[in-house]
Amino acid sequence: MANKKGPTKGSGGKHRNALRGKGPTPKAENRVYHKAYKAKQAADRRKAADPRLAARRRAAKYTSDGADLVIGRNSVLEALRVGVPSTQLYIASHIEHDDRTREIIKIATAQGLHLLEADRLEMDHIAHSGNHQGIILKVQPYEYASLRDLADKAEKRAKAMEQVDSPQMRIAARPLFIALDGVTDPQNLGAVIRSAAAFGANGVILPERRSASVTAAAWKVSAGAAAHLPVARVVNLTKAIEALKERGYYVVGLDGGGDALVGETGFETDPLVVVLGSEGKGISRLVRESCDAIAGIPIDSQVESLNASVAAGISLYAVARARREAAQQQAQAAAK
Image 1 (cartoon, rainbow, N blue to C red):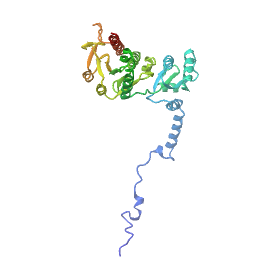
Image 2: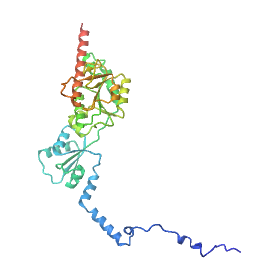
Image 3: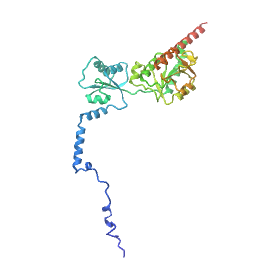
């Protein structure tokens, strides 16, 4: 009769589980009974007590790598004066106050910002630099509008103004947008926003890639115009232009080799998009092909091109003047 328990010698029989491996031997520093474990625990405690690392941990609670910061007393004061949307103001411990810091704290308190005191190590970590003068302002991320909302709002306003018995107001209310192609300098962007607001444009259009964003630097240069002039970001500028053309807009690109002068293309009194490129490269080929006209600014031959913000101001003034002249002609015709 066969033995049901099986063999007990030579094959691991009833002691098979006892013969299984238990994996690799743990490192000495992971074995609680080993002296290397105790040495590692002591090293971790020393590391946690390091004031530099502690400062970094505290600073990390309030900042992120993507935070938009304004650094330095003069810059922070200018940003607060023009109303750059902000969330927190960091002030160095034991800072030596002057007229600027006192005004900074006064404005920040009035605006309801969180005032946080930090030591020198924390301030250095937040600013990623030691050149902060003891003052750092954290700015809110800018909220971009959608292109469709911008166009809907502009067209609604223009339609409402058509009922007004004033040719000048009716023509001036027709939609006008500025599109930037390849403008990467935030200060240029801020100056364009300022000019667009000054000449009654309905908004600025930016591509998501290879373009400046509305940062604290752009906001400051706009002198607060970014607070009430909407900016839209689009995935593809060429497709955005085509979408506006389907809604009845005309597109004029600004380039030195244009066939007409700014303000003289014949599209100024229509719903209009003015496209500007970078100072060096100008507008891209695909964007240029989507334009209804290419206009230039007459400049001295010794100067190759104009700064984007300067070109924006000149072209917007030219459009405003053309609309004003067209309104005067309509008024004179109606008076006869």
